[in-house]
Length: 180
Length: 180
Image 1 (cartoon, rainbow over the protein chains, first blue to last red):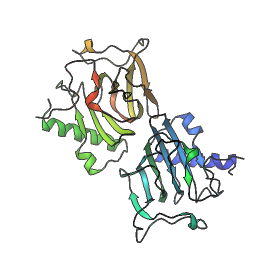
Image 2 (image 1 turned 120 degrees about the vertical axis):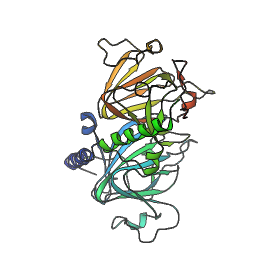
Image 3 (image 1 turned 180 degrees about the vertical axis):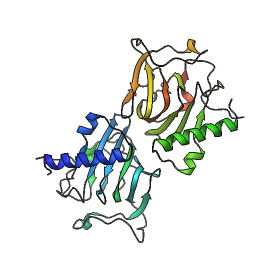
Image 4 (image 1 turned 30 degrees about the vertical axis):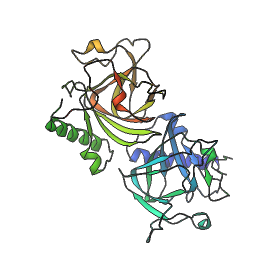
C-alpha cells in the first residue's frame, strides 16, 4: 500500500528526473505517472515509476524512471492463453542501470537485492546499461533491475503489456498499486 | 541515388542534432544511421534519417531525425500476406513536426509538399506535434510529415517494420537507398 502523498512526491521526483534528462512529457502524462510500490511499502528500495506512452494490441512503449538504487523486483511475463508473454527491450537514456537475467552469475556484481528480500532474487547474470545501450528480454524469462547511484531513465519498447499478468518471484508482491 | 559523401554528411548532421537533443546513441548506431533519400536525389527536401533501435517479429522502435523542412513523403503500410500493415506511434522529442493524414484538409497549413512533387501529396489533415506530443497512425493509412524550421526528432514506436513493402503515392520513389 502507498499513500496519495507518497505517490505525489514520487511523481514530482520522477518528473524532475525526466526534465533533467531533457525528456518532455505532457501535463496529462505528468499527472498520471504511475508509481508502483509492488505492495511492499518500501518504494525507495523496491519500486518503479512509469510513463506509458502507448499500449495497443500490437506494441507498447514506456519510459521507466528509477530513483537511485531503486529496484524493479524479479519477474517474468508468462504465456497467457497461448499467446507468448511480453518481449521487451530496455534502452538506457540517462544514468545507468544494472539488469539481471538467467545465466552464469556475474562475479563482483554492482547491484544488490533489497535487504530483507534476498530470498526472492534468483538470477544474477549482470548486464550494465549506460545511455544508448540496450538489451532485449525474451518472453517468460526472469529478470530484475536496479538503478545506479544517480537513478536511471530507461525506455521500454515491447510487445503489448499486460502488467496484471506478470509473475513475480516474491509472492508478497502486488503489481497493481493500492493507493490509500 | 545518393553518394557516400552525402550519406556521411547527413549522418554527421543527424548525430549533431541527436546530441543537441540529449539523445545518446552508440558508436555503431552512429556509424549506421540510415539516410533515406527515397531515390529522388533531393535529400534536403525529401528525405529522412533513421536510427533503428530494435525491429523484431513483435515490435519495432526507431528514432527519426528530420532536417529543417525536410519531408518524409506520403505513404502507407499495406497488409502483407494477410498480416495487417505497420501501425505506428510518432512521439515528438525535439523541434516540431507537421503530420498529415486523411480527413478534412486543414486551413492555413504550415507544411508544404516539396516543390515539384505536389501531385503526389493527397492527404492534408494537419496534426502538429511539439515535444511530448504524439499521434498514432493505423495500418494501411496514408500519411506524410515535414519538420519545422529547426528540424525535428521523433520517436517511432510500432508493430514490426517492413520498409521494403511501404507503398508511396509518388511512383518515382525507391524506399531502400541506393548509394553510389
